[in-house]
Length: 283
View 1 (tube, rainbow, N blue to C red):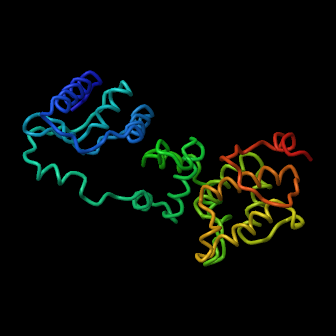
View 2 (view 1 turned 90 degrees about the vertical axis):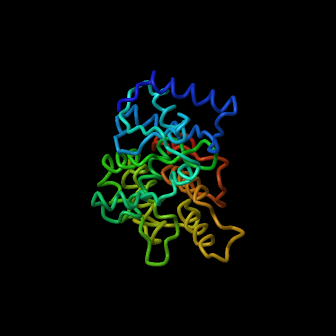
View 3 (view 1 turned 30 degrees about the vertical axis):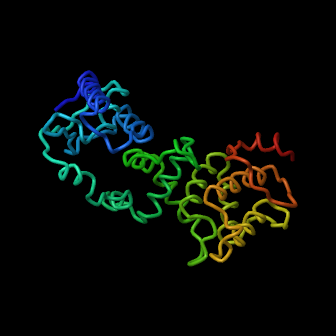
């Protein structure tokens, strides 16, 4: 059936009233992050009917679908969904969401994408970086399945080029592969040649130019090598720290800045244009 924002609002108001007066107890906290992800899909036309129902129990209490209902209200757009009334007993409620969900990698494989594990992870990371959802924090979210597919469709050739460019020797992947792939896609927007040279050195220790020890990319590779062994727990770099260092070093590399010591930035730096790099770091 088509659920209009007005209909969703009526269901939501009744649901809140039941929770408030104690006639129904909701055991699942509301997640702003999950709701906002659905809102984004609805507004972008990516929300598709999949026969997953919104469920009400035999007392007309909403037992499954609170995030979808609120998303319809916030998006202000009607959505087609199956709706089921009369689900009986707490035993039935306990069955909800207990089946094993399909992973994004499985969806990518189903669509025929090769290297689905790395490709899907690269698209997730790329989306999060571009939408400022990268890094720690309770309100940071991953893309929905449709957002991930949209990212892949827009960047398919560049994603696969990045995966190959940033793939290290077997058993010696210094930087997280999906992070390196996502950053390569973003770096080539500013300077394709510099991005290729940067990751050639980070990945394989090779470069088109000279590699004096004071080059930022040399310092980055050294930090990754020190961090890689599982025994190096004390100085092991998190994936977020890797991303901060990589962007910081790529910016300095294009300004031809030499450094004596590499320090982790306080926050994720922006990827600067070549001109901005020269202005900030000097020639």
